[in-house]
Amino acid sequence: MRFFRWILIAVLACAPAFAQTGAGSPPDPAVVVAPPPHVLKYRFVPEKSKISFELPTTFHLVHGTIGSWSGSAEVDPRTPGVIRSRIGFRADSLQTGNARRDAVMRDRVLEASQFPEIVFEAKSYKANLSAFGPGAKIDADLAGDFIIHGVTKPLQASIQCAVLDDHVLIAGAVPVHWKQHGLRNMSTVFNRIQDPMTVIFHLWAVPEN
Image 1 (spheres, helix red, strand yellow):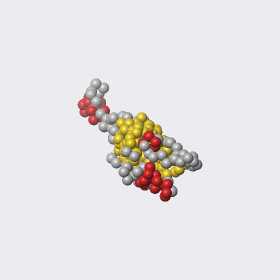
Image 2 (cartoon, one colour):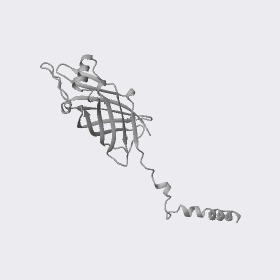
Image 3 (cartoon, helix red, strand yellow):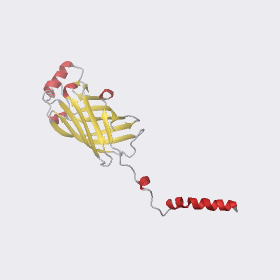
Image 4 (tube, one colour):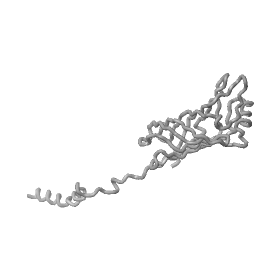
């Protein structure tokens, strides 16, 4: 009898807890309400990144690099498809390894003293970010504006993102139709400079939040 008496006491003591967690009771809001989406905000690290370009001509492919630039990107999952990203390049930092050619490119083609910055502003994207996190590999299509020599034209780029523990690697290549921006054509009878040029990028980005 003493054994059954202790069982009865235990059941009565636990009854309020059973009542609170029963199937008919409303769930605890603190458990079912998800936290707000996390804004993805990154800053590009130029010293760990590389941006280069290729300009085809009649005789050979001109290879160049961009020495001075900065940029960042921000995506809010609550507004899917919208991105705020800006990369600014110093026009006088483009180099091809030929001092004479670089001077012509800087002073006569880009007119860097008058148009000192080249800018790409991404405004929209197509990608699935639901699995964004360390180990994820994400393909995305970006759309935005490319501004060079004071002329703005739409630009689209496909990128591949690899998400690591403390940074993101972004790679891709995009054709740039330089004639659309009113750049001076320095072609000669024997050596034609072709359009478009290709910009190749391998970016290292670190979180800012």
